[in-house]
Length: 201
Image (cartoon, rainbow, N blue to C red; front, side):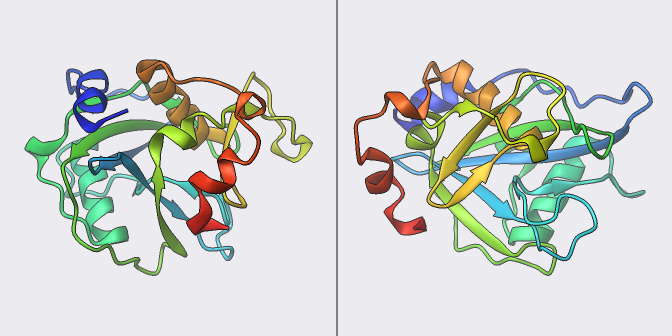
């Protein structure tokens, strides 16, 4: 999987929604970069009231000064990880995703970039990860954790000792489907995951 392929498959019309079906709106930015594509993900602080410790994408709720949800995603990305992505560098928009435990409807936007500068987490982020995209997507498996209280079919993705589930996993699932790399972790050759994610273990 190379960056031009990722950019081609994840490019789409961008039309930030203004109606949210009575749910609370939010937006995230899926940042993919590098000749061997990596995706930027964050870990939320354990002290949060909701979504504590979860692996997610930079993003959040709109503020009064935001022109639209794309503005929200770009502002939150700049604030949370110190990455300033120009509006014109956003390449696509995925389908909306609902958080089942907090009632948000999230609009995911995608920016596929040749390279990015060093990142810096603010107080809303415990840690930043730059995860190899292809290997991550190939870990997709059914979410069987009863603590997640799943009320619909869901998947999880893993890297190192981290698990991506819930809304963030459904966003990754959209990317996996578009890129044609869906597949359970059980189908991977023995030891492959530990090599792919050696830096996270």
